[in-house]
Structure formats: C-alpha cells, structure tokens
Amino acid sequence: RSAPIRSRLLGKKGPTVRSSANIRVVVRVRPPNHKEQGDNSRDVVKIVDDQVLIFDPKCQSQAFFYHGVEQKGRDLLRKANKDMQFMFDRVFGFESTNCEVFENTTKGLIQSLMDGYNCSVFAYGATGAGKTHTMIGQTDNPGITYLTMAELFKAKQDLQEERKFELGISYIEVYNELVQDLLNPGAPLQLRDDGRYGVMVAGIKVHKIDNPDELFTLLAKGNGNRTQHPTDANAESSRSHAVFQVYIQMEIKATREVRAAKLSMIDLAGSERGSATGYGGARFAEGANINKSLLALGNCINSLADGQKYIPYRDSKLTRLLKDSLGGNCQTVMVANVSPSSLCYDDTYNTLKYATRAKKIKSDVKKNVVNVELHAGEYVKIVEDLKKELERV
Ligand code: ADP
Ligand code: MG
Figure 1 (cartoon, rainbow, N blue to C red):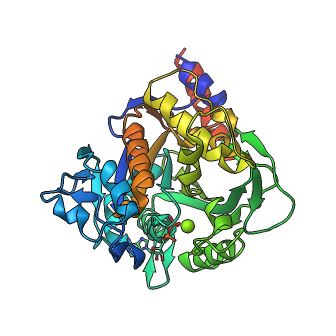
Figure 2: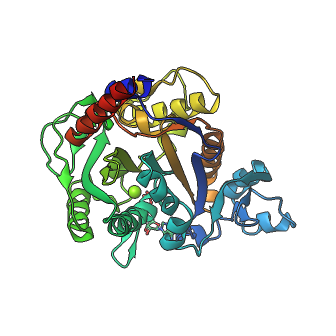
C-alpha cells in the first residue's frame, strides 16, 4: 500500500501512458529565392495536399528540362524523376505563415506541458532552408518560439487560480561541441544530470520570467550573442545549434502536487554537412566536431525509430542535453525545412528521408509528476499521507 508513497520519495516518474502521436513531423517548403527562380532551377517538390508531397515529380514534358539546358541542366536530368511520395503529419507550402505553422505544431504542446510532459521542437534542414525563419522569424512575423511562449503565458494566466507557476528560461548555443550560455557569454559550460529537469548545463543562469516582454528582451539578447547572427546564412551560424529551454514548475494548489516540465526549442545547425560526410561514415572532414551533434542526433533518431533499447544519447553534447526531450519522456515536434528547387536537390531529398525516419519514433511518454528534489510542500503532503495510512492500519 505504501508503494506509491515510496516511489514518490524515490522520485520515480508517474504512470506510463502510451501515446500514439508523441512525435509530430511536419515539412515546410519555403518559397523559391531569387536564384531559384532562374533558368537553371526547376521545382522538385510538388505539394499534393496538406499531408502529402511528391519529391521530384515526373515531368509531363521532357522538353521542359531541355529548355535552355547546359551541362548543369543535363546533370539535373540524369537524376530527375524520382517521383517519390512522402506523407507527413502536415505539409506547409510557400504561402504558409509562422502563425499557421504554430497553430498546427507547437500549440498542441501547451497542454502536454501543463500536464507535466517534457516537449521539444526541432527545426531541421540545410542552411538557407528556413529554420531560423520558422523558429525566430522577424519582428513583424515572429517565429514559433515567440508564438509558443505567448501561448504558454496565456495558459499560465488562465490557470493562475488553480496553480502556482514558476517559469525560467535559458538560451545556449552548441558550437564545435562546446556549450555556451547565450545570455551570459563566458567560458564553455559542462552538462550534468539534474533530478528535476533531467540533463542541465552546469553553472547556467536560469532567468526567471514573469511576462512576455522580459522574454522577448532575453531572446533578442541571446540571438545577438550567437556565433554569428542567426539570420545570416553564413558558414559560422549554420554550424551552431541554438537551444532555447523553458523550465516550468507548477504546484496544483488544491492537491499540492508539483509538476515540472521542460520545453526545448532548437534551431539546429545546417544539415548539409551531415549528408556530405554521410551519416555513420567512417571518415570525417576536418573539424568533425561541428557535425558531431547533428550526426549523433541522426543516430539517436535511427535507434529510436528502430525501437532499440540502447539510444546513443551520450555521443554528443546536443543529444546528451536532449536525452529527456527525445523519445522516452517527451513529446516532440520536428519541422523539416526544405527549398522547392532543384538547386537544393540532395539537401531536400536527405531532409525528407530524415524526417520520414523521425516519424517512426514511438515511445512511452511519462509524466513528471514528482521528481527527485521534492518541493517542501510535497514533503508535508507525503508525511500527511503516511500518517493517514498508519491510522488505517
Ligand atoms: P536557415 O536558418 O535554415 O539557414 P533562414 O531561415 O535564414 O534559413 O532562411 C533563408 C532565407 O529565406 C531568409 O532570408 C528567410 O527570410 C527566407 N525564408 C525562409 N523561409 C521562408 C518562408 N517560409 N517564407 C518567406 N521567406 C522565407
Ligand atoms: Mg539559420
């Protein structure tokens, strides 16, 4: 009879709930840029409906390809017409807005967070595919990080009668396997296991936030401290992973149940080098560290998709950090970003394959009802429960 109480003291996770949809994989096709509207480019992504797209569709008229063909055009033709259908939880086209992406992806995570589940959001794709546009966006078109946070504050407001909330954030960059605090730049930081929130960055300053304005100021500051400004499509920024994390602690006033949940939103490094070196390939180019985290993420996704017991989270900084945010105790959203153009043929194809792989991840989602470090109020409650139990004996 005392088992549940013991498990609470030992910090066991709550009941396991099987979820059929704990990863949501969506693809966003950005509009063609100036170069992609030229003669050397053709569309290789055809959106069929809001879930299906065809990569490299069969062309009705071969003449289309020969129009103004030079050597490059012939190369394109040689590998043309894969005509592969892909299906995702959602496909967003050129005209999609960040609001629409938010409504159909991360908005659904808010309830999970309120229920005490960890959640993570990844923007995956080659440099220039639209990751930062999706995650951060612009002032007049905020990305899903902002929109999700605004929704989180709304939920906090709506539930304030019922719960006490504490919200804290951190914003870090993983670059060349070094972890940097984007909000307090300094020496690289180490990772450690934390009872309540899982893996944490040792020595990181978690910033308490009470309103969206404070958050926006912090996010802007962090973005300014990235290795290069994230909206620059240059070599440096494309090699860093920006990891924005929100720590949510809630105490249900009536029951004094304490729930903790963590939301991680990640603007990943460009995936192009991942495919260039070949995932799992033995030889690495110079500075292989740059890719190590992305490579490890791919390996973890593969292992999770295959239902393997051992997941190589420890292989990189990024995957260690996301150990409790990918598979297991977590709800995940992956936004795979692609260009529509043949100029990005391999990148788009690799991203679609990667995203398809990620779709196969299924696992048990556990609730962080009470974790190792108990809130003082929680000890009082447990002692009361124990007393009641003794009275019943
Ligand atoms: P990444 O972060 O993947 O390297 P960016 O988000 O910086 O790519 O996008 C590259 C360029 O394309 C930027 O100028 C960005 O504003 C533009 N862009 C990306 N996605 C979209 C979109 N869905 N709609 C309009 N412009 C976009
Ligand atoms: Mg970017």
